[in-house]
Length: 352
Image 1 (tube, rainbow, N blue to C red):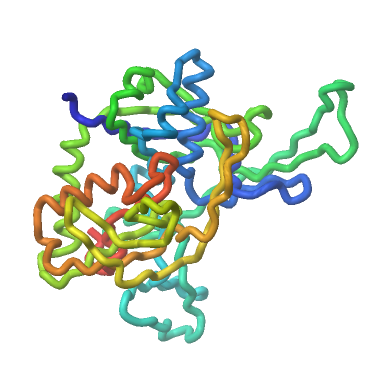
Image 2: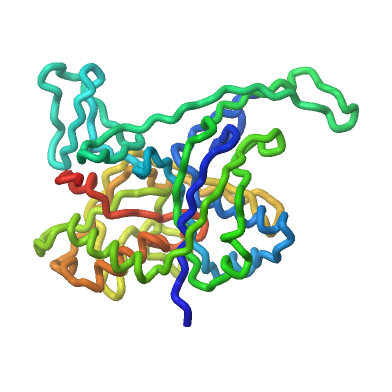
C-alpha cells in the first residue's frame, strides 16, 4: 500500500481576494476572514478540477471522506502566520507585547492600555520575536449589468474590499486514498477563490509539492516533543486554527464533547480559553443548494488544555498528534473544521 500523500500548496494572490462569511452590507462586500477556510479551498479545488473535465467523486467524498483540507494562513518572507491566543496582550501606546498564560500583566509605563490580541495573526521572526501581521487591502467598485436588457441598472454599483495581489498563503491537503493524485492535482496552476470571481476577483496562482505523510509525521513529532517538554505533568495545549467542536465524534450526531482519543489514549479536556465563537455555512457542489449553517463553533486562536497523566512522554502519542495536525482532530475535517496545532506561543516559553 502506498503511503498517504500530503500536498503542500503555496498560493499567491493575483487579483483581489474577497473572503467574507456573511452577505453583503448593502452593496458592499468586505473581507472579514483572516485566513482561507478549508471548506473554501475544497470547493475551489474540486470546482476547478470539474471545469477541466475531471470526474470528481463529490458524493463519495461526502459519505466517506478521504481528503482533508487545512485552512490556509498568510506567509510573510517564508514565515507562516498563526492566530494569536487570548493571553497575548499588546499595549495600545508603546506596543509592548506580553505572553502570559498564568496572569494578566499591565504595561508598567501605560496602565490600563493593554488589550488582548486573541484572534489576530502573528508570526515568529528570525530572532524568535513575536510579530503581528496585517493584510494590505484594496477597495474596488464593479458595475452590475442586467442580463436581460444588457445594460446597467439603478443601485447596481457594488464595492469590494479584498486582500491585495501578491499576498501569499500556505496550507496542506492530506489524501489518504490517492484520489487527488489520480485527478492530477499537481497539474493545477491556479484557482478561483472567494466572492466576485465572475468579475475577475479571487484568482490565485498555485505551487503544489507532494510529500510523504510518514516523513512529515516523523519530523513533526520531534518538534512537538521539544515544545511540550518531557515532564509527566505537562499538559497538552492545542491552538485552534479552524472552527472547532465535537473532537471525539458521537454516534448520536453533533455534540460538544471536546475530549480527545489519540491512538487509544483518552485525554480529557480540562479547560478552554476562548477568543470567541463563530459560525460557518457553505454551498453543496453535489446538491447545488446552500448547506445548513453551523453556529457556536470555537473560533481561531482559542486554547484547549488536556490532562495527559504522563502519557505525553510516549513517542507514538507524539506521532499521533502530528498525524492529527495534518488530518484534523475530529469529524468534519474534510471541510476544514477541527484543525489544531501544538505551537510555542501556546506554551509561552522560548519561541525559537
